[in-house]
Length: 293
Image 1: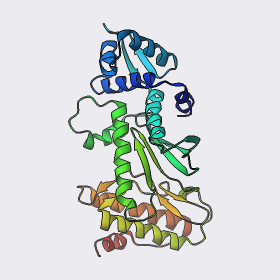
Image 2 (image 1 turned 60 degrees about the vertical axis):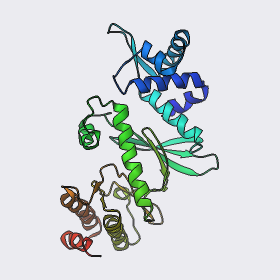
Image 3 (image 1 turned 30 degrees about the vertical axis):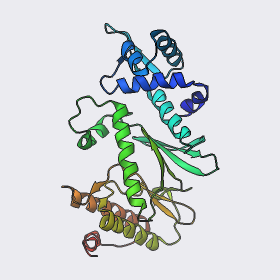
Image 4 (image 1 turned 120 degrees about the horizontal axis):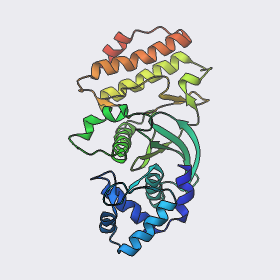
């Protein structure tokens, strides 16, 4: 991502148009032929070849000459460039900050807009270590035969962004969605760390009750279940403010596996507070209370 941020200011609109032409072509095949890139970009062949040479030299695309026709595909930096460019053009962000979190499926950076507001920028990297995540996303890939890693990561970002929008209306302790483009989400930032890494919490019982209450309201009013809740998906700052994050795995309350997923979420929270803070709770009773208004 830092490489994309450094390259972006030096790119011309013609370079970006070539990258977007390749992106369009990748909906049909992994590698896009030069003739198709020419067609999608609406450039003459001479201009197409010149721009391809430039962005290839900048290491934004990958060249394949093993077939009858030479083809190109975007690499992760090229895709990052397109998403960053769109977010900058919309004035959602103006500056990229440091890496503040790294997981199997995503990276999180600090970022800032032109008014000095600090946000978190989450960029999906599904497929980086394995394709198990892609299999989990088959439910909303549908019957699409060709699903590029671009498309999978775009769907993942959109799913979480839509979830954040829906939950934020309830004015709870979840990130405020600021913007979204391709595989990147920009959201509010809480300067803290995951609950799992906190050694001191002023009032553990109060925090436990706050988390359960939030999950209950989301279940009752938004009809949503986190699906992957635990001490690594709850950020806490020095004032014990919280943010429940990572909503990619959410499911609706009428999902076939809703009960088991809700139970797992609640048990994860209960087990953590019992082991670390010796807070006794009854997950079954808590879940039963979710059905009561």
